Structure formats: structure tokens, C-alpha cells
Image (tube, rainbow, N blue to C red; front, side, top):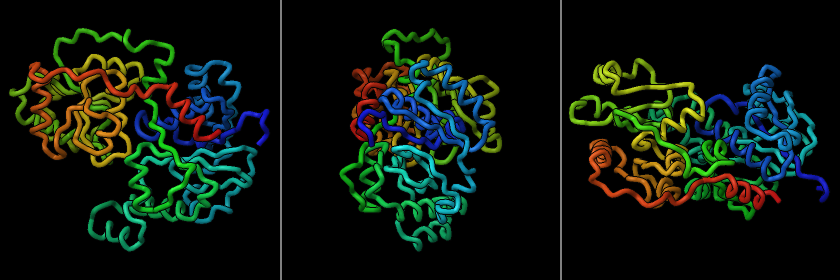
Length: 382
């Protein structure tokens, strides 16, 4: 690598705008951090039809100086071909001059001649590095076939990487240690870089102390993320809706919940305006919703990071979440924890917050800000 040339990173940007939370938003924010860290980027995606949306994002969020270090390249194979490439990577090989390749969901990248691969890891690719155990998960009904197949292919692909050429970047210490327990592939180049929150990107030139909470007549708590995969707001909402008259607060959900999953009490709460389910809102609108709320509620299965927890911490709002090791790591003593599965305890905490029966927490321990993330990426790659 030439010392007078900024390293160039090819970023698998295919699914960058497929969702407003989780890995897609983390991919977009990592991309922003890498540009601020001084790298030149090639955003790699599969169709020219995606170009206008990417250009809108570039124009609306990045300075002209940063945009000058971005190249758009629509030569990426489709996701189906990328799945095939996990098994037979030579079939769709391309030669793209770059120093690093950044990827998340597809461990094997069909590119010849790369120096290093950056693999962003949010969860282990499988719970067991053993085909028999993976198959048993499906047979015993613990996971859907599609999910089992996807994890098995990713696990197969990951295990065949040349780890000497891979820089593994984990989303948390918890995720790193869990992966080590499964794979045992500890490398000195491994890093832990917490995903920076979308609000930190939005407010990179602002002091968050100046952000204003509007006066809201009916207090509410907010769930960031709908009912999908690991996230489970409905278990709390169902119990709340079944005893609606007992609670002096409402709920707002940012994300999709299938109509078929809503029982009569929840539908009644929606008709009464006590529950609002919102989709397709902007980052600015989401930030204001969180600021106006009494706090962020998060209930999930074991998670690799926990964006809603970090976003509440960044905005210095109360966060109420189930007691998971990773949330203790990223939140310290700041969150109000309830035992996983104890939704009565969760609602009791929310009631105590509304009634002022619990003390206000000290200032949030970590703002998950842009400068810290930039420094971490520079340390990991230079």
C-alpha cells in the first residue's frame, strides 16, 4: 500500500437502505464514519436503479469534500448470486482495485486481488459450529428452514475464509466473546467498534444539550422497531392493552406489526388513540418522537448490540430493557432493567417513571458519538 495514497475500501452497499434500523442503518453509519476517518470508498451495489437514492443520500448528508472520495460501482452480483458465491466464490469473481473490502452478511466476497477483508460481525453466523446441531435446530422447531439454511451457508463460508487476511470488527465485547466461544479464532487484528447511532450522524455539528423536547399532553413510551425476528414489543403491549385503564401512559411503536398479530385489546387501544404504530418516518422525525417520549422500551431475545438502547442513551432519555449481558455492557447502570419475560415488572417500571417514584438516572455513560467511532476505525485499519 502506497504511503501517499489514502486506503480505498470497497463497501458492500447493496442493502444499505432496506431498513431504518439494525444492520442496514449501521452499514450507512459505518460508511459515514469511514469517510470521516479519511478513507476513500467504492460503494458497490447490483443495479443502476439504486444509484439515484444513493446520490440523494450523499448530497443530503455529506460535504462535497467527503463526496469527492466516493465512487459508485453497480457491478455487484445480485443477492442470489452472492449466496451461490458463499459456496463457489470463483464463479462470479471480479477484479476491483482496492485495499480493503467491507462486508457484513456475506463472508466470502467474489473479488480477486484484495489485500484485506473487513468483516463486520453483529452476531455469530450460527449458534453451533456443527452441522448436526444446526439441523437439529430445524427438526426440533427452534428455527425456520430459511433461517437455518442462511445461517448454515454463512457459517460454511465464514469457516473457509483465510483468517490471516480478515479484520473482524465486532459490534460488542459480548458478541466477540460469544464468537470466540463458538469458533475459537482469536486474532490480534480483531476489534470491537460500537455502531454509531443515526442521531450522532444527524447531530454531528450540533450540541445535543440544545435538542428540545416538546410539550406532549398524553405521556407515552416508545418502542423503536416493530415485531420482527428478535424484537418483541407485543408481549409488553398485549399485557398493557388487556389492562388499559390501569395505566396513565400510551405507547408508540416505530416499525411494522402485522395486522394478524394484533388481538382485540390491542386493536381497541389503537382505536382509542392509546397505541400508535408508525412506519416510514425520517431520522429527524424519529429523533423528535424519542425526545418527546418518557423513554425508550426495548424487549428482545439475545442481541449483538441493541440500537434502541444506544439511541436512548445518546439522547439521554430513560431506557427500559430486558436484562441482557450486552445491554449491561453498552449501558452500564443507566437503563432500568426488567427480567426477561417478566412483562409485569416492565410495566411496573414504566408506571414508576410516570409517577416519579424512581430517581432520575445520572447522565448517560456513553454518547456513541462520531469522533469516538472515527478514531476506532482509524486504529483498526491503519
